[in-house]
Image (cartoon, rainbow, N blue to C red; front, top):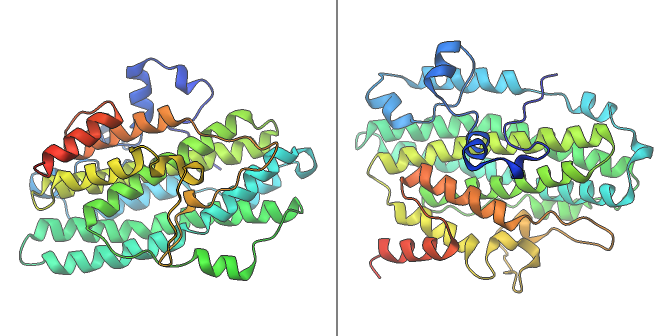
Length: 331
């Protein structure tokens, strides 16, 4: 079983800025990765199609290679955990994570449907963009499978711990398919959601003492960073195509980073009530004695980094995100 950990490791937050950036963007394509023959994420998709002559078969082969190199077994990972040796507070972390992960399947299902619709919409108008959309929808099958690992491992563990079970009604409620939106907004939101999840899981891994459970949280955190890198690559390709405006990426980032924004999750003063779908960060529950992995500064830094990679625009504070968004919309 191969465990990959591109960001979350002990002491990562103490890394100097350059080293931290390398950790945050690991898994992206570079000439070294290509030359070494190692699997990689094709970070510059628009260039790959327009200048390098790559095809959908080429891109999906790279997706498959990376997926196989990172595949891990839920059953093996759970077998390595001493269930009796996990503290009560750590058990609650598992319970929260299992419920949250129930919302990822509808996100992946939505992405598959929306990416294919966008692919068809751009055929004959911008065939490169059509191919990029198809690559995105095709990759969603790996995202769906990997998130299934997260969901089933955490919920199975919660049952083994004897915690409150997820009811069938809650399971079905959390499976509501997300409504469609502008594709760049969708991909930016997914990038940020993965950032928040990765930081949460990484911080949990740092405080968990039971080695098997620590390894599980580190593995899931690494998966989420890999997903974020894919979403960033697809979002960048949309901006590079010239068909999608950078303002949409900034609109979503502002939605998370504004005062009382989504980055604060269920702790924000006002949590919106939605009938259409369930955002996992709105439904985390913090109980007495339970560790709360906030790390807002780290999440913000990673969001700024993602915006730079998607749009080419540098920002370093929530205020700058808002100012740039207002500038881009012409206010």
